[in-house]
Amino acid sequence: MARKIDIVDGRAALDAVRSAEASGVKPQRADLATAVRYLLQLLDEKAPGNSVEVRVPPFGAVQVIQGPRHTRGTPPNVVEMDAATWIAVSTGTEQWADAADAGRIHASGTRADLSDVLPVRP
Image (cartoon, rainbow, N blue to C red; front, side, top):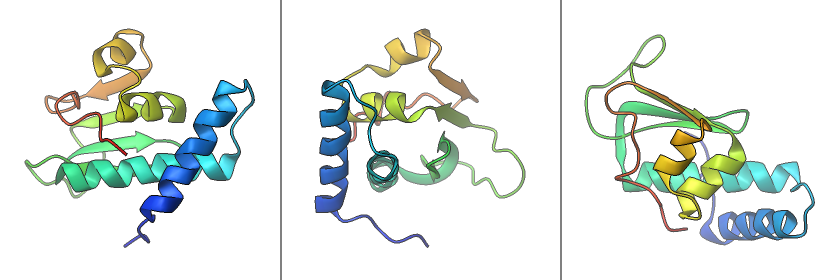
């Protein structure tokens, strides 16, 4: 199992990403990776399960939401988005529906709508 990201480290990385974006500069890759993984970790804690795979390439993926367990091949319920979109929807700065309607979230499967479990409140 992957090492858990400490709340202080996760929040610091998230703050660094937000600060960089507010200044109009690209966030440091390490901060972006930690922030994404921290928010995925919070989602896993809030909605544990194995029926939906949430992917934020290249930084991480997690299986969440109670339901049928997936063990081989491509899961039937997959959600994928870039890091900026994941940070926005998981922290509540953007609504799931707005990001999905804009085409920044690729979701397939009957359980692939995460609007009921987002934001995760870091």
